[in-house]
Amino acid sequence: MRCMIGGMVLAAVALVAAHPTTATAARAVGVEIAIDGHLAAGTIFTWNGESEAEIWQSLKQRPLRFEPGFTVPQSAEDQSKATLTGEIELKLKQAGEAGASATVKQLELENRDGNWYVTNAEVDRTMAAAGLQPRAAAAENSRSGMVFASPLLVFFLLAALLGIVFYMVLAFLMSRRKKPRPD
Image (cartoon, rainbow, N blue to C red):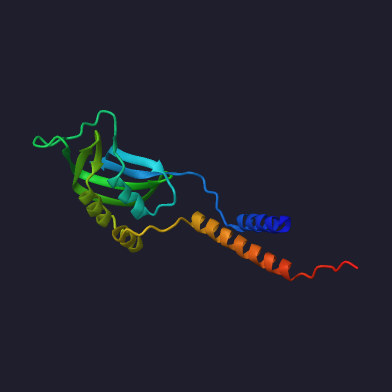
């Protein structure tokens, strides 16, 4: 029994040691919004490997932070809506480096929970103007409601399966071992 447990531990340690992991430093990414050449707003967060399209899509969930002194031009009819007008440039930034960008004449915002967000329709419109396409697989999975396991979860499930197989092989070999006969 002690041999079997030791074997399973050894197999699990070997799998963990063999698992390829990459250490990457955290990087800041986000989208800047400039009006007539002057920075007006943006959003910033820590990069977790997202593509440019996924970063752009994050504008749907990430509140905008405005430059000091900037006044959001709220609609007179609906205070939860605003329209930025002028030469509006949205620029994706990754670790200070420019990425995709789009220039539009107006940008619709909405106020949710006391924060301003780019509307979903505007995120899609500006994303197309920037030449970005959402990944088809991600869009298909979100529509179907399918959830895929993370690679780390799959790794641990495979490690557990390998441990069980190793245990069964050892148990089989131990049962076939001839026991010495007492004389």
